[in-house]
Amino acid sequence: MQPAHDYLRHLTRRTFIGRAARGIGGAALGSLLSQSIARAVESKAGGQPGLPHFKPTAKRVLCLFQSGGLSHVDLFDDKPMLHRHAGQEIPASVKGTQRLTGMTSGQSAYPVVPPLKSGKLCGRHGTWISDLLPHTQTIADDICLIKSLHTEAINHDPAITYLNTGNQLPGYASMGAWASYGLGSENANLPAFIAMVSQGTGKNPGQPIFSRLWGSGFLPASHQGVGLRPGANPVLYLNNPPGVDRAQRRAVLDDLAALNAARAAELGDPETLARIDAYEMAFRMQTSVPELTDISGESATTLDAYGPEVRKPGSYAANCLLARRLLERDVRFVQLFHRGWDQHIAIARQLPNQCRDIDQPTAALIKDLKQRGLLDDTLVVFATEFGRTVFSQGKLGDPAAGRDHHGRAFTVWLAGGGIKGGMTYGATDDFCYNITENPVHLRDLHATILHCLGIDHAKFTHKFRGLNVRLTGVEEAHVVKAILA
Image 1 (cartoon, helix red, strand yellow):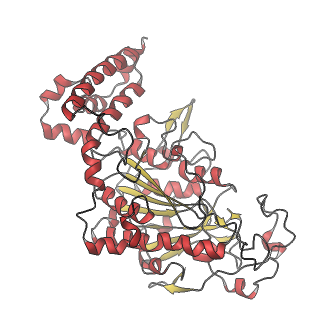
Image 2 (cartoon, helix red, strand yellow):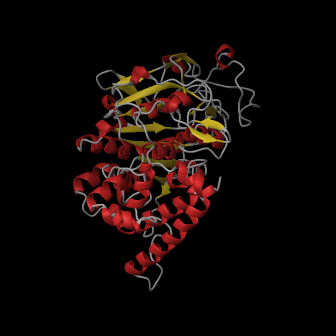
Image 3 (cartoon, one colour):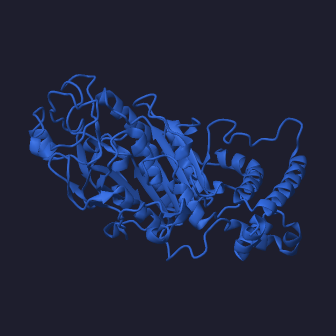
C-alpha cells in the first residue's frame, strides 16, 4: 500500500477536523465551520480518543522540581535518634550493603549528622517541617508529604531523567509530553506543556538541566515542552525578522502550510504535520506570550506575597508567578526546574540559602492557587531526584562537610487536584535511612499523577519499537490510593 493511502486510511475523523480547523491544508472545510466551532475543536487538539479513562480530579499539573537532591533529613524527616546518636557511627545494621557513590565509598567513618536546624509540628495533623522553611510550615494543611519515595538511581542525570521520564536512559517522553499527548490542550494560544529553569543560591552552578527533560521522546514532536526563558525573548525565534509585519508573516505561513500539507499527503509523515502545528502555535504565541509575561497588572499585594525576587526575571519567585498565570490560562502541564540542591559540601551554608530561594514563593503559589479556586483541580508536585545521607560526607564538623546522595528513602510532597492535604504517607527508620512503612517507587508516583488526570497508567501506551511503551514502564506500578481525597 502507498504511504499516502495508508496515512489516509488511518486518519480519524477527529484528527481530520482538528487539522482542518487549524487551517492546515483544509481552508475549504475551515470556511464551512463557524469561528466558535473551529476554536472549540482547536482547544482540544492533540488528545487521544477515549481519554480521560474516568473522571479526573485534576485538569492540570504543576511540577516544582528541585534539582540536585534536597535533604529530606534536614527539611522533612527529623527523628529523636539522630540527636541521640549525633557524631557516632551509623549502625552497620542500618547502613547495610547499600551501594554508595564514589564520593563517600572510601570514607573510613560515617558519623550521623542531625538536621541543621530545629523544626516544629505544623497544621492540624502535626506535620514536622524544618524552621528553614517557615513559609512552607504555613501550608502544612494543604500538602501531603510522601516520606517513603525510593529510586534505584544514585547519580544525578540518571535520577533526574528517571523522575521526569520514567526511565534512566535518555530518549523517553517526559511527564508533560505524556499529559499533552493523552489529553491535549485547553488553550489554543499556548503550548500544552511549558518549562522554566532557575538557578538557586545553594550550589552554583547546580546540576545541568537539559531540554530533553521536557522533550517528547518517541511521541509526536508537537507534544514536547516549550522552554520559557527570562528577559525580552521568552521564546527563541518567536519574533518576526526585521522588516516583516504580522500580515506578511501570516501569508508566508499559509504558503508554507500548503506546501507542508501537500508533502504530508504524499508521504504520510505525521512529523510534517507536527511541523505545521509548531509554526501555527508560534504565530499565535506572538500575541499570547507578551501578554502572559506582562505582570504589570498584578497587585502589589500579590507581588509582595511571592517575595523580593518576584520582579527579577528568571528567578524561582518570578517563575512561580508565571506558573500561576499559565495555570489560570489552562496550560496542561507546567514545570519549574530549580537548580542548586546538590549539597555535597558546605551544607551548613548552602542549604539555608537554597531554602530561602524557594520557601516564600512556593507557599505563596499554593495560597494564590487556593485563593483563585485553582488548587482544587491543579495537582502540584514538589519533587526531587533523591534525598541525602544522614551521615556526613567529609570530616564531621568541618565547614566543608555535606551529605551524599541517598535514593533508598526520600521525601516529596503533593497538593491539590484530588490529594488529601495535611497528612504524611510512608515512614523511615530511626535514622531516616530505610523505608519501614508504605514504600512508594517513582513508578507509583507517576501512576498516581496520571490517575489524578483521569488516566489509567496501564492502559495509556504508545507503540515504539514494537512495544506498547508507557510512562510507568514494564514493571509493576500502583496508584497510591491512600493519599487520594
